[in-house]
Image 1 (cartoon, rainbow, N blue to C red):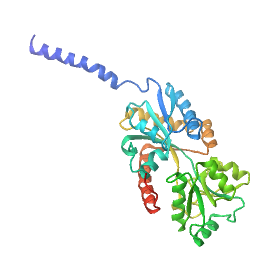
Image 2: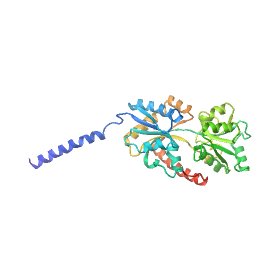
Image 3: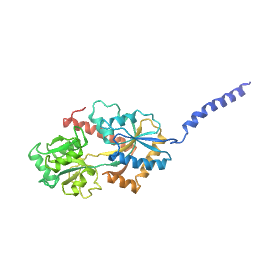
Image 4: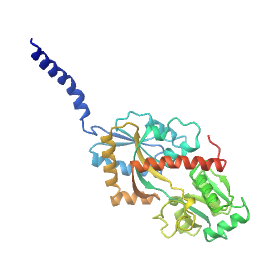
Length: 326
């Protein structure tokens, strides 16, 4: 065998050996079902939205999207499962900002790092919180409530779902923004907190629009301001705290779609394109709004910037408000 023939043969053999890996690298995505992890139990608002989104996404991808509920430990169990999953584009996470920023800000030990271990795809919705008082309360505006809180420090108590919960952080931001001292009171959940506010057991509540809107419409609660960045479809006439002169009190709760870090760029790009298109679907918008969520598409780069910014902001808030880190 002469040198030229040897080189040609060797090159052919090398090319043949490389073909399987080239074929794998160029394999279209997806070729099998996609798992969408929801770190909440079945039946809740996040689960309902995940199933609606998953069904539409499956139609566009041509593959099943299987919902995998992994609740527990303030979303940590499900989020950690995604962070440690194979980065192949077949495991996704749909969760609220607790998974992406709140836990990282308030927990000294977390089994995952959202910035390092998750690849943002996009924020799909906001879920504004609303500041409410009982219909019988003497305050009809945020200004009246603020004046009362400044006059008697810690006389105004507000309901939370525990230290470091969304309502707790939102209440502390509100107190700092208006220069008053409030007293947080923990309850086991939204239902108990709402009953306490309606009955006058506690002066103020901060909860999701979906939870309190029926009571506002029934005349049992008075909505003074939306805590989120935008107004809420379920209470369109209620202004945001920013509109009422307290922009620093904004607490922006949201839901984002992510994958394990180092997932294939082609898969992430495809998911971003399809999800963004889905959010224009009137049926999906109706589903989101019925759960008190506002459809919104925020791209991966902005998602990451928001996540990192909130982690820093909430850590500083926890330090100022003496919220203990777990």
